[in-house]
Image 1 (tube, rainbow, N blue to C red):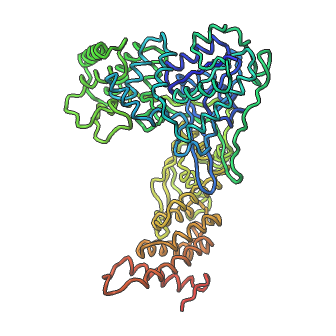
Image 2: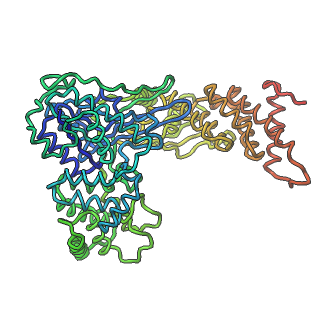
Image 3: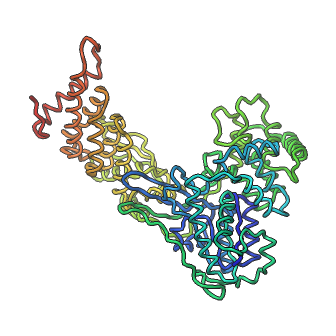
Length: 630
């Protein structure tokens, strides 16, 4: 049962090539990949034929927490190479990591955030030893633009150094124990067939040690040369999806954790974009400039360097920035000189960027160059530098295969938009006194509250006291809409349910901020969500009952009371939700006012307005709401 462990850096072209090469040579019975085990029954969806990048989006929601997690794939992701090449040689494929909602991922929105970044002291020592600015430059120097020979051993050494002897945190330990149990199951059942395990490099040393301890005499931690010595044909190609066949038995897989009772969630593929994949835009993968690495994947280091210069020049010229031929010649010469000094086989990303910056930025730079450190672009970055970073990011946006399953919200939203005539590009003016326009407005507001791009309200009523009776909207459908709707599917299966869940989340997050709470209540009115769930109503009542200041509480009460008394436009007249808010606000205002002493506090318009709103609440709603005026 030979097992080959390949530690990778996520979204690394060099690692992707290595994974593809090993799988093509060994033709393993099983290919095990770091990824959510709860979607193993749907791995086929990943292989439908999408235009990359795409991501596996997982959501989870219960009474105490909400999780949204992405596992992105692009052409040069090692995990994608493992899945596609494994499928081509007939290997059975399995994800072996805990589900995205599991507490082990608490605080991480991206499954493939580089684990070694949490051990910055090791990375700092390595960067000092190799005299580079940061881990990205170190990685390019050691891996991406270095010769391919000996890469497997180089990676193993690198990740052994990163991991060191330090104990991993609780979350990594839990994940590694779970992944090791999948490796043990596959190895036990594979017979003479190979098993290839592809995970983040940080986890590789722990998995190798675990496998060596579980399987005495097994080929744990083999190098590529050791694995190939056993014979790439020994695995028996074509093991099939169930992993059974001539190579061994069906594995007894570990149990997959199930969501707690009452929790809502699921996983679906979404289109992704290079911009969302870019570390300079906040993505946690640790690999910046996806447009550059795509070119590195397709054309090699020399082609990527040429493309980088051309992309920057083209972008700057479109922005009417002067970029002469002499500037480009100077940039290329500087990049080649830097590559030589830095010991690079060919100019790498930072060599070319430094060369371009020296040739194109004529003024002093007040903010450090972004590729000299890690993280997002800082405010005040030179405009030319900003355009350079954008050019390297690339504009690619993925597209899902038409047969890709989608959450129910996608189909419900499409139907609602088509039914209301809102599914195309348009500029609309809606008269809110007309029932048909009011219905269309409610649909648009529900979509707006879900954060779906392409639906912008240009004008309309801003509060319940606003006399505006017309709305103007601009509708611009775009490729990013599908991604947003799939992700919003975490809130509910229908537009109405999802909108109510978003409002409930906002109400809970508002806490004692009654101004924020007033906006939630007005958005509920605009979207036709007049009455909310008992849980949300309790949260709202508690927030109003704990409001610390009279002024904001009075402003909210004035708006809510007007909507409760008069509003036939949005359907909130005599709303039970607003009735609860009014009663709670009146009691809280009287309680806060009792603590105000005239000799200690001067006259204040906010306090006076609050007492006036309290008076009106008692006068117009007291009897209906059971408030005792006396």
